[in-house]
Length: 246
Ligand SMILES: C[S@@+](CC[C@H](N)C(=O)[O-])C[C@H]1O[C@@H](n2cnc3c(N)ncnc32)[C@H](O)[C@@H]1O
Image (cartoon, rainbow, N blue to C red; front, side, top):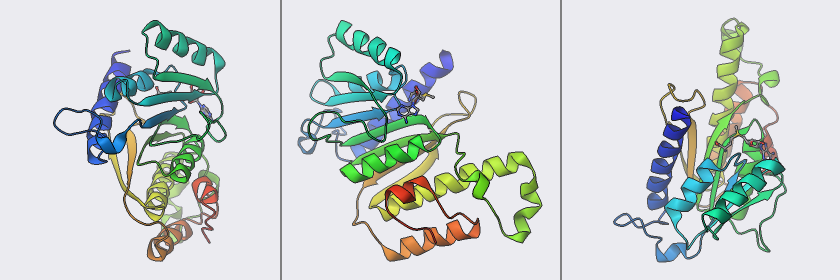
């Protein structure tokens, strides 16, 4: 629990800085800026809602905060807690990341998805990009999709005969491709460790702020070169963005 608490604190710290960088929170008093009138934050794969409650506390009553989660018992638990503490701006909905809707427009200004397993992170990233979210913040885990496709060049073949290196390489290639796809989609993107590995091994964070027009052909060429270097032909986020990697 101490490690989880540390993760929540670090997450809130990182989120606050990024909200300021994205122009959604004022840097002096952490109040919502006028640009951010009634923003919607959606936490996809929210689990027990620890981070969702932290985000709601940070944004205050003038933001809408929604948690999405497949497990109905967690949704009931979180909604009860939100009601008990009279947090009417905060709600939890049972549903799949790829298809859930929240309200008529499913407006989305800030997307959060921490440790949504494997390609659920890609589904969340795609929802954020398609909705034109101003800020996207994910911490991926269980990057399994690309591992069976990894066919590295000859020079890496022996090194990658070791399972642990294959696993690390699959994590690296998956998250590097995600970061490059976000850049292609118009987001200034950074990847960093948000907490020490002493608290969780799943400590990579990808943060993206909408900043430039999407579709740069140079970026597309570079991400295709990376995919081709490792023999990657399919990746879920690229698929959602209707981009061929070959
Ligand atoms: C490891 S937990 C992380 C919970 C929370 N984000 C956190 O960091 O404390 C992952 C959660 O995502 C949910 N999840 C995984 N795939 C999902 C999907 N496709 N749609 C909705 N929820 C999903 C799981 O049920 C689980 O509760």
